[in-house]
Image (cartoon, rainbow over all chains, first blue to last red; front, side):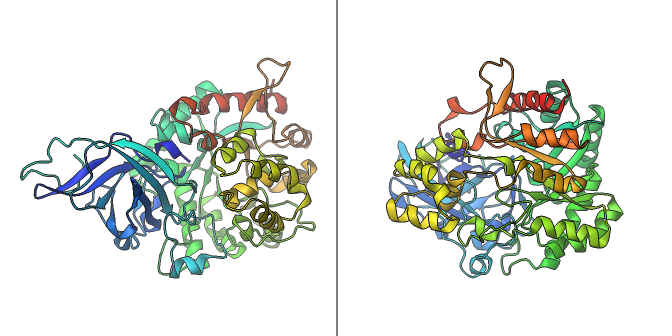
Length: 166
Length: 352
């Protein structure tokens, strides 16, 4: 679902700390027709120009709060990612991305279900690794996006963003 | 008394995604574009900060529904058993979840909640007192491939179909008879009368299969195989076909899981009906008249009409997701699709 629209086209930017690029980020929507409890959000398969960035390098920013790891989100059982809202995926990468076009591969993993299934206990012990299609909800393929890295007006100097919305 | 028309706002999921119509715009379309009053919602699509909406939102919703003289028919509710990630939700927790949805439905003015077919029967039973207290009926969905009559169905072991409990409908009817509670009911989905995959679904799966011939083979050969055997056969004949099991299931559909007359078996228990559809196209030789070429509406609606069904059929458009991989220019117009569906509903219910 929403294959071509899961990443906002003009949202790929570098993340900066102390004036240095420390990673990149982009804005995503939920690949479903309904929102989800944040605890169900299990990360992304992300590749950029062929290089993969596992879940451990990702954080997720939503609901006006600072970016959180998926270990932290696991316990947000009463907080909701509303259907209408955009989240920001942050990915650690020293030096950030080079200027220009990048090919981003994405599969979202949200452990949303329609009730009890035979693999439930297994998912508690070993949640699916994003990218396999398992736990990928309504968009089981990896979607590819050709995105231009956007210039950030405030990327230089001490006023650098700390990974938040501009 | 006649069949009533409504819309599940599920139908406008893409329009909402692109912020072309918010829930107020969607309700206005049902009143002004379709000339009817039935509203069904997806709780986690419409309600901000679910499951803890603000008092302001609850008041705004009821007030807006009143302004357009709308009827809050059914709220669709879910069961995500991994909400607490350190354990699979117990049935007791699942019941608390459903009770909370029932209270929320009541606060928004809804008369019914639609639960998923996979919600265990003891969970439903535990919620009957809450349903009675809040005057909200619990309708379990009858969704393909679940049959009304179990017959000789073989339990699949692969994919989503592995979760199928073929006795789900019987269990609900037994619970209703045993408790005598009118708050236990059913929500049949017209997908149970689907007799082949929609052309939009076939096109989507072919676009994403590594070998589209595998899709043609499934379409042709599915009738000769059992559920799990078919998956094995596809793997064997087309190694690396790249078609997920759920998509194989969609392509394998070759006969409805319910006969049209089966609807009469559940007629007394119907809370509301999902008018599932994928692609409304003009009927050749009948300008302005529309049909979905993969779902039989005519026969079941004849039975409903002749037997005095006077509840709601709420449009549930699901064809958008198969057309969202092609880019902006190819997005389907949900508003137009639902208008066409209502042309058909009006015609087949004898309203015009």
